[in-house]
Every structure is written in C-alpha cells, then in structure tokens.
Image 1 (cartoon, rainbow, N blue to C red):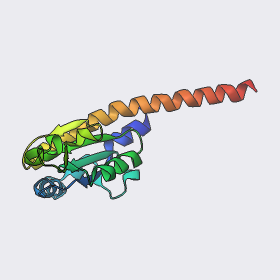
Image 2 (image 1 turned 120 degrees about the vertical axis):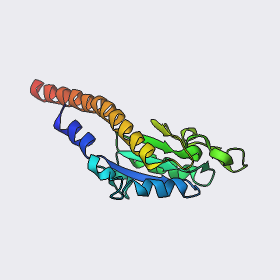
Image 3 (image 1 turned 30 degrees about the vertical axis):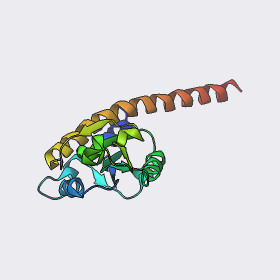
Image 4 (image 1 turned 90 degrees about the vertical axis):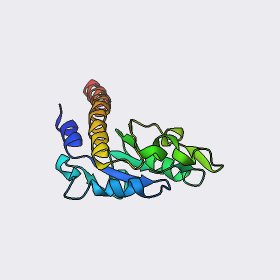
Length: 162
C-alpha cells in the first residue's frame, strides 16, 4: 500500500450535509465527534469544505430545493470519494417519501456507498458505517492511484522517447 493510500485511509476528512431532516440524525452525527464516541480516534476530522473531504455524510430527505446543492457538494469533492447515507430519511426518504416536494433518498441524486439505517441512527451505527466507508475508500483509492501511476509511466516513457 502506498503512502498516499495509507494516509488517505488513516486520516480521512468528512463533510456533513443535511438535506432537511428533523435534526435527529444530525445530533447523532455530532455526538460521534464528542469524547464519548470519539470518531477522531480513527483520524477522522469534520471539515466544512467539500474540496478537502474524502467522505460525504448525508442526512435528511432530498427534496427539489436541495438536490442541486447536494449534487454540487458531491461534484466538488476530489476522487476517490465515498458517500454515506444516514437515517431512514437519507436512505429511502423516510416518512416524507410520499410528499409532493420529496425526491427520495440520497441515492436518487448521487451514488451511495454505505447505508446506515435508523430513525434516528445511533452513533454506534454511524461509526460502523463510516468505518465500512473507509474500506470502500481504500478500494477506490487503489483504482485512482493505479490510474495516476499508469499516466505517469506513459508520460515518463514519452519524455524518454524524445
């Protein structure tokens, strides 16, 4: 495993996006950052800029007003990136799924790698989901790193051929 891949998995940064939930899952996500659950023991830091984030944690039901903002945050994240949908609302649309303004779960707008169920999801479940996401981040990172090194080798061989 390369230094880049190791550091990516050992110190991932996540960004939390609330699509408009009841704040139950948001409170539980923030509880993960407290000393009781201490998600930072995995090297995870909550950041405010999607350009620095490796993991996107999404709570709440996606509606027509926030679907574009969610897609923009997702598009601004660098590869490799992993998405974790949290709670009944984030995974399926929850009790609001039949409302006229609801699109549904997060996977209706962006690809989701890990689903964490619950209403509200417990901090233990959220931490388990983020740890699963770290494994998926490592897998995606290998593919991205392989592509980078292949392009680097092609560039170096082209320079030597001159």
